[in-house]
Length: 575
Figure 1 (spheres, rainbow, N blue to C red):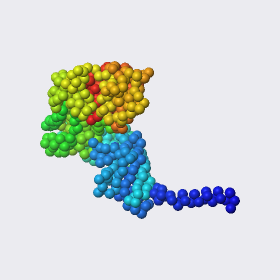
Figure 2 (figure 1 turned 45 degrees about the vertical axis):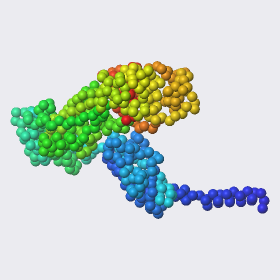
Figure 3 (figure 1 turned 180 degrees about the vertical axis):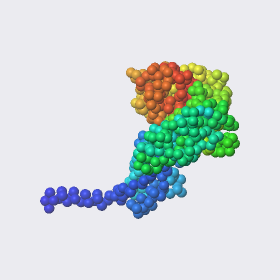
Figure 4 (figure 1 turned 90 degrees about the vertical axis):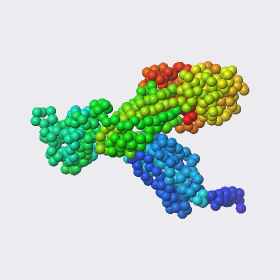
């Protein structure tokens, strides 16, 4: 055999050996049929383990063991385990989600996809599945998120004893949305009780008449929708629903409701519900319980509650958030115009009060509730904040004017994050002294359990063997601390904006989840022009996460941070 044939034979045999000994799991990495789900915007959809098992059985002829997901873009939504709207745990790409619910691992049927606020469209999530023999395959989950459609209602607001005019363009727009055609006419099929108000035709003339429930009111002829007026009763406050049916210009039917919120002019005109009370230690967020609101509504009106609208608290005390999660999950500030519902989104139970640093004593929040009949009532939420201890258990100087910091300081000390300062050791914390850059980074390093990496050394002004050497050297290696000309300024006081920049970098390195803030939101602070460009993203993110709230509508970016304030910030990041 010549040399060319010998070489060919050797190559051929090598290829055949490679092919014959390819692991079965590689061949098995075929793609399964796509699993499809549908949900509405802002509504979670929970996966079904049997759906994944069925595609595994069809493809592999074996039962499914577990799957690992490739995570979707966070701009579309997130995967959670055992999602209930609060205290949820995000799924990571390394998590094994099992089909067999008897295993002591994550159950595939407890995995939910939660669309990002207001997102609509199609989300495709890839996954790798493994059957009980260990062979793998790939598949996709396709989730269609329908656009968040309104209830189709036309909404108006009016005070008790006042009138509101209907607009023919409002009804025509509604018809266009429903049927893609102009409106011809409507008939009102349910008129309000006279105790709530009256619907009139040509109310602004001397011969106004109540409308008939079989009369047609037209978009572009007479009698015109534009000549309809609702007059609220002097003694009524609440919600009025007037149903209508009609035809578009093609003769197709439309149906809908006019929802009129009668505000009563002021809450003093409404019946008052029993106060809802909560108490907590200083610095603790308070999450509202929707059953508390339902109980006071039932006691007052004999009906379940439908929704509430909140009057916002003074920003000097704290902020109301919807969907707030410590550490930066998606959250928005509560709006006075938004309805928060008992049994549909946005839920009352997802409203949280986040107090400012030092908030103590009683805070009273006002709200207006509406029962399932549309009747309104006023209510108060009384929040009592007290320090778990008015004096520190460990530091003799954390008391009196610093009692608000007791929770933060004692918790961080008991968990090994911070220590005392000066010759007093653990008997003195010096809460009013501005914290140094070295001490702040040391506390941040300990609080977030940052990995130790001192192989590249530290900055020139950080002595080897100092208490913060490992923390600062590791922060330098991790890209958290960057310094200037190889100097960190270890003994200098740290500014608020620099503290926030270091905090966000550390949060990112540690893997702590957070939602990036919008720098445009900083315009709400009167001193936003003083914020350095490099710090804007960090400050916006920590504001959105509730770690900082500012004071007197200012962020004070160039001010130093006291040791007590630093403890409060790090506590909120850690817990």
